[in-house]
Image 1: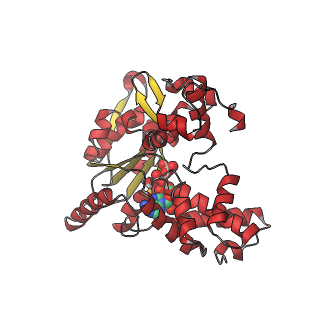
Image 2: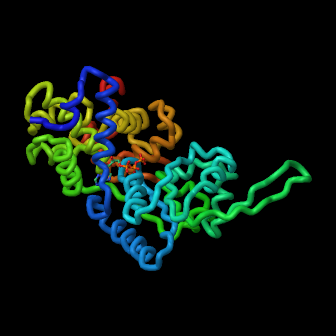
Image 3: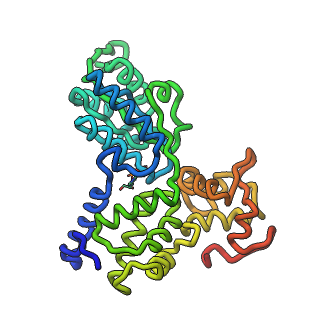
Length: 346
Ligand SMILES: Nc1ncnc2c1ncn2[C@@H]1O[C@H](COP(=O)(O)OP(=O)(O)OP(=O)(O)O)[C@@H](O)[C@H]1O
């Protein structure tokens, strides 16, 4: 029932098999705005910005893409380059720890190039300041020499479009945020959109899957295409090994095996909820306390776990911390104030 490329590689060779998985990841990325599912508003806004730039034969304005991981920020950056027939350079905030790192990238850009900086909020402060001038005037000042004899030498850059991506737009300093011509806020996808993402991916993977199986995955992938695609691959594996058919029962069995519950909560989500509900009687609980309690970075809790739990109505954010809602008590089968299973038993 599967006829995808993975079947044609020797799956006993771990290197070839994992390369095939990576190749799938690449093949699943939509290449044009028309192929990109959902985010209708953002797509319309981007389309206008790109078309206007093409008419005026100039580089498009700088674009900031904000939103939780896996919603398509990298994909959109690739589309911006692809639609305009422009080369793309990819970097990330953590890789730019000195102004010199950024100067090296900026000075080697070719005219019209799209520079994608993922996790731009994690770039070094000194590089951020260099970026202000680069974005506004396509120019940087390079310091030559040290101490009293140091001089700054201006260097003209090729016109470029910066596409920045961030899971935490609030962490960007205002002068940087203001220099983007357009900020796109990506939203979680609804189930109908995720079904489209999954149907497209199943076709590309050559996977024959039932409609109701697609709907079940769409309801359990946290509104996130990357997770939808990942769960689809695990369902494909399950069907390959156990049932030879990607139907509803295969989806349920595969997702149970991978600890994804019917709301799409994974182990970390459940650990966070369990801490709020049982150790803190429903909250409020501060972000750092939560992070320490579950042994995760507070950034991961804030950028990955919390937006989804808020969106599905299991927690609310208050000035004093995170609070569980009545729906959360119900989902975990607890009465308010009850102590539940230890976290390891979840
Ligand atoms: N709108 C979409 N339609 C179809 N597939 C999508 C869409 N958005 C994302 N995807 C798929 O989800 C995967 C993750 O997308 P992408 O890497 O662009 O997310 P991201 O927001 O950049 O995540 P991160 O912030 O973690 O880097 C991609 O492989 C792509 O196939």
